Image (cartoon, rainbow, N blue to C red; front, top):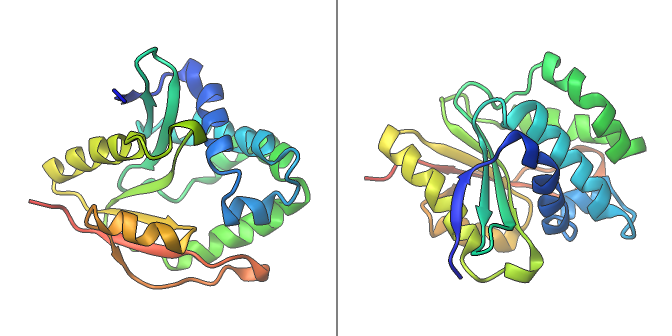
Length: 203
């Protein structure tokens, strides 16, 4: 499958959110935050659209992967060095969308974010918040194209990268790109664990 990776445009945040909403419909963390399977993908899409519009796009960290027809089939959301901790000004703009998406689980999400922030490295780095593809293109190299595009730029800048895997099965996948497991973090409130991974810049 021929894949083109490029920066997302402001008018594409809705489509980007839909792609990630479907990609994360079976994710343990999203399932914990949005227990209802019937509308999980739709509600998750609202969350991803909100975050992309008010944070990731503003900082040049929203990437999309398109197929031969131009359809967006994958997306990755990155925060540049010094911007992984979303400021209150941006959180305020996100609040309506996050409330609509997470509903009664909004406070649990905030507590989870606080817990993960405690484990977050202080060294400047690019932070991969989310990456996912449409289920129909899984295994066709779309995720690889998204990762490789940004990691190549980070290596050219000599910048490390960081992510938190929500599935233990994904840890070996990220390890193939040079990410190293740092620890396991238990999310407060009975949430599933997370696996932070750090990647030094590669020569």
